[in-house]
Image (tube, rainbow, N blue to C red; front, side, top):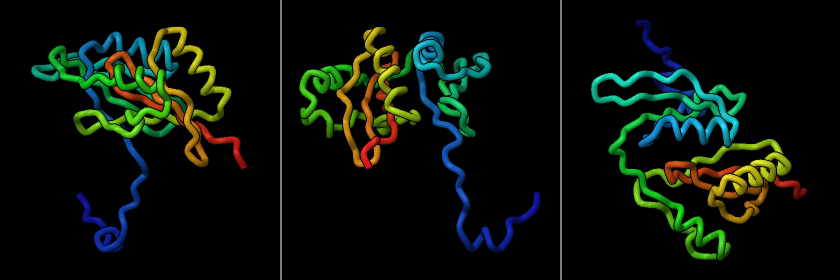
Length: 164
């Protein structure tokens, strides 16, 4: 194995973004159904369970270099649900729930969409499937809304604002 150059040792590392995020699910099949059939993402091969590690699969969010989300199936996984918080936000968009975080380290995962047209099409599809979501919010140069996956994980759809 070669040694790193002095420039790298004493300089900056050149990060290239996230490679993947690993999450757990109790039901890999239901999770793949949600991400592939509802959100239109691509699933890779399903790796079989080995010893204490459950089945697992990468889900790729579009034409990107990242490998996306690496879901591991653990039937006994404890996943904090956020559906009730999002239901309150759907009923009262200015609720203080907007500024609260869930127990645990992961707050949400944001996925980029190219336009409001795409975001509204996804919103209609989510509504048709009874997925809980917030109102649309403006955050300067972006617009967004939050929804939950089949595990109760908060996801965010983000797209560029048309404001000049």
